[in-house]
Amino acid sequence: MRVVALGVGDTALGDEGVGVLAAGMLNGKVPPDVEVLIPGTVDNRWVVELEGTSHLLVLDCVDVGRAPGTMVVFDSRELRPCSMSVAVHEFGVADLLVLLGQRFDAPEQIVILGMQQGSVEPGTGLSEPVAATLPEFVAQATRVLRAWMGVGPSDPPSEGQEAHPIDC
Image 1 (spheres, rainbow, N blue to C red):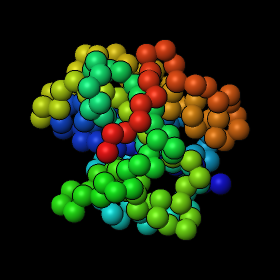
Image 2 (cartoon, rainbow, N blue to C red):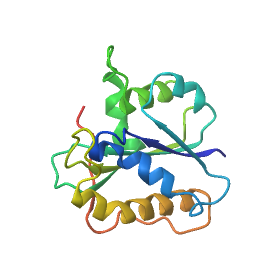
Image 3 (cartoon, helix red, strand yellow):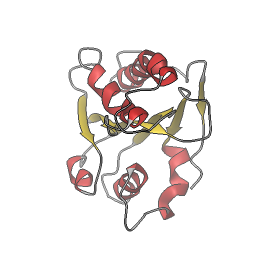
């Protein structure tokens, strides 16, 4: 079993960096066998880096039209419709997941824990609502990872979170 938390984003672009910051805060909170990777941005090389991953948690900002700081959870079932969304010129998380899903050793479970962005202006840091929700975002990520490792209960999304299918 290979469990990976992947922190995605760009800390120079306001709330875009929430996934990177959250992944950095996982140190010491998750079982030692969990790999925490913080690439910032992803590209097609990460398909190889994630080879053999059985459980993948992606931490990232999202824009799903909710109030800034709202957490959303997408699981493997909700991601399947995105298999046709590969972009040619830009490579993002959805593209990475599509390519991973096409491999014979695709992860058994993929969860994206997303935080609705407020501002992605260069050099601004996290917006107030995203910064306020960051501790619970990290706590939810920790619960998912610990449950996968068999050292904690499998909790549904906490209050204030929504399961929301990705609209491809």
